[in-house]
Amino acid sequence: MKFILSLLTLTISCAISALEPVDLEPVDLEPVSIIYMIGDGMGPAYTSAYRYYIDNPNTEVIEQTIFDELLVGMASTYPRDNTLVTDSAAAATALATGYKTNNGIVGLGPDLTPLLTLLERAKELGYNTGLVVTSQVNHATPASFIAHIDSRNKYNEIADQYLDHRIASRLKIDLMLGGGLMYFQRKDRNLLAEFDELGYQIITDYRKLVSLKTLPVIGLFAPKGMQHAIDSDDKIRLATMTNKALSLLDEKPFFLLVEGSQIDWCGHSNDIACAMAEVHDFAEALKVAKQYVEQHPNTLLVATADHSTGGLSLGSNGKYLWQASIVREIHASAKSLTKTLLASPNTWQNIWLRETKISLSPKSQEDFQTAIDAWDAILKTEGKNNLIEKKVSAIQQIVIKLINQHSHTGWTSNGHTADDVQIFSMGRSRELFFGSMDNTDIAKKIFTILE
Ligand SMILES: [Zn+2]
Image 1 (tube, rainbow, N blue to C red):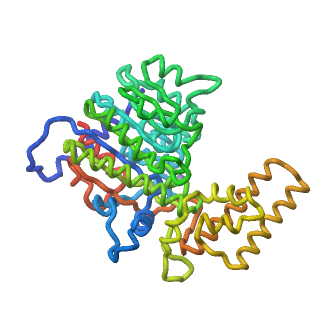
Image 2 (image 1 turned 180 degrees about the vertical axis):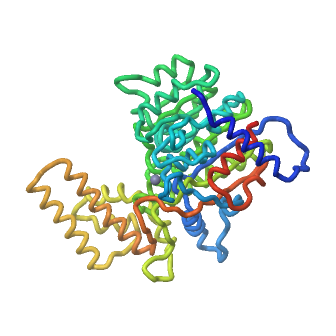
Image 3 (image 1 turned 90 degrees about the vertical axis):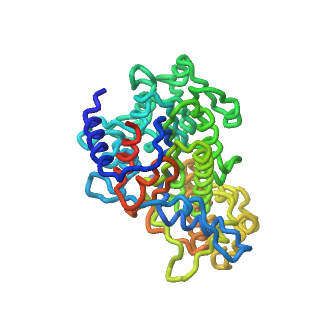
């Protein structure tokens, strides 16, 4: 594959680095390892919410979080087209290559020219490369670092490219942890068998994570995305996988992408408790990375978001109040809570109270019961299986609305928004990321380190 624009990238990178102030610190000539973290959908309202959510209510002070500690700048996220609101493919392509593209496109310019990615550049330099996500490993964000395709929805083709596209006849990726088994073990092609033949250690059981001892490795732990953090046995599965990845990659310089993939998914559902659990997992992964950088100073850690999701606001409907304490008490996603409630149609009020600690007004209880009865009546007459899904999703909407009302959490959308996102950094060359920039600048600056 020709990377027509790669030379241009390097030229721009050189021009940028020529303008930088001279670094008076002793120069370490060893190649710099890079930990690049993306909180999908994690706009600034999410990290503010997390500060109040994680706060110890028994102390007067609201303690700072890892995000407060590492904050260095802000980035705009608009895509190449004129929508201003990016999707994850265009945003991740910008963050991976330094070039804007249109929504939906992965690793290609708007004219479908392939763009060199940071991960590919790292591999050209002989680095170890890894990606750790909680979505399928071939979802838009990770895909934009490895694949080059006109649509993020071509999941099978993206998975094929992970194996078929090589750099100097070597595979691009040495470590992949996340979900996506159904795309790698298909009727028409068993990519896992092919990876196995090439010497990869492959696991599909999350509990076997500890058994991974040397690169190259692949761990795919779900058919598509992994379970939400809030519903998982390991509530910090991203942090656990990041820790494992760092221990395997660090035998030589490495490039590791870590994505908190499902902050965005909970945001699309407007499910605040689900989102906070995902941000918590991302924060714990960030702490793992921070600890690694403290022990290995020749490492750059950069974290950001690709965009914000849902138009989250802390406070709603004119009320001067956000009830973090209510969100803190909820330990299941709205979907899983809905299924638990519907499994006990006669005692759902008790279960609701036990699971949310929110006491509902008689009117809310009556409305909830009426909605369940109405769906049961429809199911009785129509009796179709696909309506059960619809019932769950309709009742889930009521559950979400009640939690948002009581916690005074506002949302403006089920999609993305164009707010700027934060940049967090520490370690080697962190000063490159100070201040306001565009999302493409983040990639361009990291390219200057991969020279
Ligand atoms: Zn999204």
